[in-house]
Image 1 (cartoon, one colour):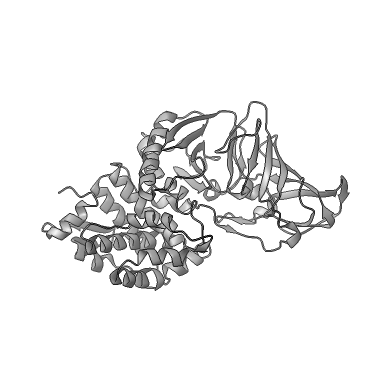
Image 2 (cartoon, one colour):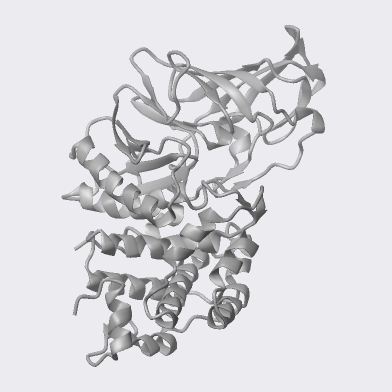
Length: 478
């Protein structure tokens, strides 16, 4: 049986792009035209970047923080700017902040690739002698939005990407901060069609599993979420699988979903006998991020929903697809509750989302997941099984908002389908009410024992007819 404590909660490293934006950007540097970018890789120590055909600017800012990875601006060195090929004096104002004496139409610089912290592997650019991840969000100034990007790589290296190439290693890109490239000596890809969408798996190096088995596992999950949301993805969904850039980590895997790309970094030395079932469970969380939040036109801090609620939907999906059994479903809820009880909860889920990177990162996952479970049970009980949390997702993608809208307003409005659910969201999402499973789950036929070691969830021997039907709708077979 797979240990979901090692799988679903580890998806806390999955981010779907939340950047802390550098503050010094002049109006002149806010570009909307397509820049011409060349990214050159000659060794694993640094990346050289040249940018031309840009709107004249005298200020350039690089992100200093991406998904908890700090100090990225310090990696930018040898920054030069020129006007009509005449080099200009440039002053470094702060980490990742540069200003030239006059407007420039061309810049160049190098980005150092120092050893990363294990927790940052999936979120920032890195290189080894064999392979690497190049993320335009930390390689290009924030002012670059659209670009024609050309890669100059070592002999024999190839590029893996969800994008279609204009020429060899050349790509036209909208929203550069959403793009990730897998580069290396041994880049392979397999693909299949899913309801008109091309699903692609790109791997670097050789593995103990067959790429087509990975593709099959990903396809199964993708089909499920396509049915759940009723929404076809606009971009080609792509899964990258690459080795961890360092063996100095105890983690079996790290992941991030950015744009249309799911990046999985696997530890070759992990004691995993069969990776395919493990990858299947990982996909239940990561692939859902292609929809939530990456395909939504929403703004604001709503990590409680796109992370916490996604953990619960992923758990449901793993059960439905028979990647786990019902006992493991309950055991995982118990372990999440253990994690939740290990720290003091003093925030609402809305507040926890706003302070995710400066406070307790676990709260949006643990409390969010438990809130999703309880909301789902309330809706199923109240509707006698005719409604569920899953129905909210199809409605979410059916809302015509006419542009960006506040995520919390939209989602909470969708969740509030009755006076009972309205009271629930006010208590457990908008307010600081603590979640006490031992008081709440008995109503639904589950006894909860909070022990010194772990939380035990046990189905009552004598369920009411309504309780039995509720749990059967979730996969309970007895």
